[in-house]
Image (cartoon, rainbow, N blue to C red):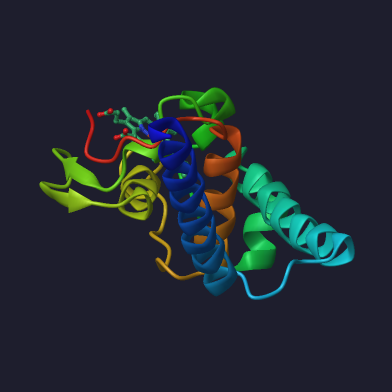
Amino acid sequence: MTRRVLVIVGICVAVLLGVTVGTHRALAHKERHTPEQLKIFDEVFLEQVRIGDLLFHGDGETEKKMGVSLSKTGMACAMCHPFASDTHPYEFPKFQEQIEKFGTLRDMINWCIEKPQEGVRIDADSDAMKALEAYVYWANRGSRLDPGRH
Ligand code: HEC
């Protein structure tokens, strides 16, 4: 008898949890994306990764097209950060000694443009920044988020 009551209580809890979790999901995503939509989102993302990859490797043509001048030293990001190593996008935001403030990934991208590369800093909302950010995140995909870490 007691076992039966426990089983019934168990089922009720499971159903309630299911409904709650289900409802939240429904609120966050009212409609499922179609495979066609997902393909378009993916293409948009990978296009930005490609542009970022070019900028990260110091491609002059791409810089010219985007109206940016990232380096005067002949150095490109990839020379010091091959495959975006040591860029640690998953650690931001965090306190950054170099700029003596609590900073974002974009702050450090600009720090490297201005300091080691002696280039012209770019707007935090610019297309070039978004592309560089996309490349750095993509190259570090699968990493565990660990904001604030050093
Ligand atoms: C001459 C070498 C050099 C070049 C070129 C360079 N960096 Fe850096 N980068 C560094 C050094 C050194 C640091 C500081 C490392 C530290 O203190 O953890 C750094 C730090 C960073 C960080 C922060 C990492 C962290 O966890 O604090 C990012 C992001 C970054 N660079 C991106 C870029 C990008 C994007 C470019 C090109 C626009 C670039 N770097 C070009 C040497 C370079």
